[in-house]
Length: 415
Image 1 (cartoon, rainbow, N blue to C red):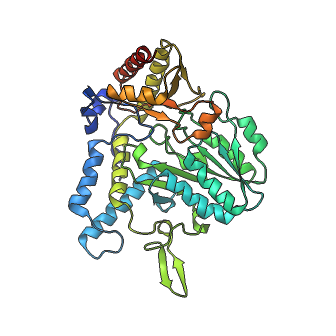
Image 2 (image 1 turned 120 degrees about the vertical axis):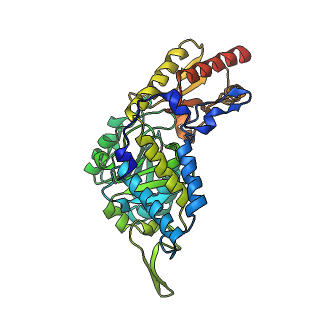
């Protein structure tokens, strides 16, 4: 039985959880580290670091076909990791979980495999204004090759998907709706289940970019009723270079392979090739074994935390940020969605986001500045970029206080 199912979540205590993350114990530029760039990547608990090291120290071997003990152990751990991810997102079958490098590769897989097989002249792919470039560019490439069209879904001034506008766009020409579960730039939590129902009503499929959601929201692909769901391990307190694509079984079975090579074949001859069954049809070459194990360990780690309390804590940090922002002249939050996670994206009059980011870094405060791979969204708000503070379960009220002390210092310096 999985640790996720058996561990009793401990009482939530952000300050205590910080001790599980070695990197948070250091100083940066002579100051204790305040890490507020979690939407870009989260830090890793000691359990994840140790799981990866243990694999390389004790079990390192290629998986699935080795005739020796190391390969057997590596294969067992690798496939158990797939089972862990399957339970984490409530997949009906583990074979519907495809290992990928991350959300970007997952979306490209769907675009090039499903998209090239199902899109044609006159078809439409609806993509919201909130999307990361990785959920825009692949559809532009495939639509350019197939004659289909990418159509943006408008958003409200607050940063929510305009559901009335979506209704006007949905017709029988729409073959796919691509939306994120949570916006990386604004923190908007989108009504995925409602959007899925609307898409299915006109015969369209829905792909959900879950990169920002898995660390903040429960994910149940069956309840969401989506057709594809993609996420990355490194935003979920796991390693970089690993992620998962979930898809409906009948869609994955019908889709052609994305990459060719070892593992994804059943038989190969110069007369022709037959392909492996799911999930291996989409997993060409030696997989990222160690980091799959690390991702499963991260999921197990989160299973020992009251994640409902963690989400409430993160929203409390956002509320604290909004309250402190009232005391900073010229500070303007970008977006004010009806439902969001702990992401605070803002601009400061007279101070370029990059300059503010550099000044905060000098004080040991790590934030993200720029367009956050959402240039259409930044253009919509008529800003070149924002400063983004994104909160995680190990951040504290003191972190927010230090962020705003740094902002006040910037105001004094630049004005």
